[in-house]
Length: 219
Image (tube, rainbow, N blue to C red):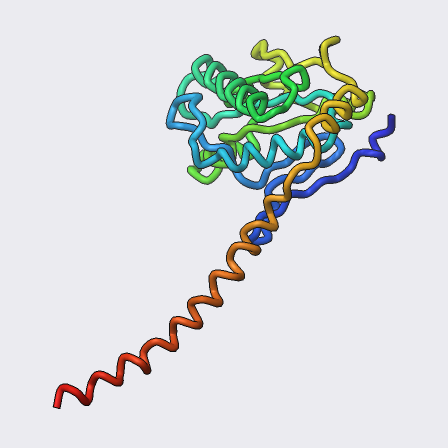
């Protein structure tokens, strides 16, 4: 297998916003997975995003193993944050497994606040740093060598995910994908539903002239 063979898949919603993008080392989501404050409970508002994410992972059978990495902001102590980020990453892997992603393709890891995207002490930075990332560790039989976690986390004793022997091969994943059969394209549905709804509204606008006829009888 060759990393250059990875199919770059993009999921677009009906507003034209890119929801997910598959690169050679990551499944990027441009929308955040939301959780209840201070908990590992996934907000129902993120259900559609997780559904799309599961479809992207399942359609790209070259993706054999993913580290699902939870990250926090600097509010709170390091031990609590690391535990929470790991619990959140585990909640995401469980949700994806319920949506049909082979659990042997994923490993949850929590990096606490050790690996910020933005080290600034601002609310904007904290919001950016609270996130879940999906790093591709093995693609089409090849270990990607992608950097997971960070040096700070490693020094604090946080171990990075490694590809286990139980990780399924692309051939196994492709068989499973074919067994599921063709999927329905969700992105086309909103437009198909919206188009006919507008026409009847235009017809009902002809009603007011009829209503004008009874007016002379009042004299």
